[in-house]
Length: 307
Image: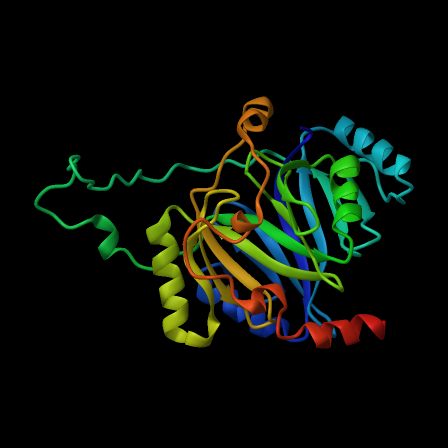
């Protein structure tokens, strides 16, 4: 795969300062000019002012400049207009209207965190002491892991991302959801159906489930209305999740323990079709209706119609 990581996203919201303040609560660094930085990923969100919430752009990392030529050729075959070609290439998905930029970038480098080993029946590893996680507190997530785009035509947006940009399909339920990867993560971009384009949710990687829990709990103690869905474990990706609502109306996920795919053949050999009962989770609360149809969807539909 010529692509190797999700670099950043660019979002437009009516009140950018409010969203930046939320990210500061999450523990991420903000510079006062709309840029949000994670400990491992660098600048990963750029916030701009817009009349309604929308995903404006996504940046992906490629390994070499020759990869841009390959991507450019595939996009041209799809009839997509291309901008640039030296160290970056930009193209707009005609369905979601999201501007995708592919940039030659260094691979992600992450320092490992301390492995957590739990006491289990018949396998006691921690004796005469509390678990270290009970004394931890909220801390910044490590990096932006993935985002999910609501699109009026999943199949068409998937062709743009897979046949054009070079993403790969990890799991999908036809017409419902597709999980695509541009790295060894199970998914970096998800697609769900929406009558108008939306940023359905975005997700930050944490060290482990306790990191997820401590950070989510602190955010909910500050504002309980942020609660959306979780704690639980997904089937697709296998990760722990906890979703909260950000001030713009999009959903923010904190996750840990995501599937890693570094052998395409091995993954495909064991992959089974994603059944409807697996789309939401393996365990956890039922998926809330607002996660499927956000409360502000009528407002977004009216805004897109008036463009």
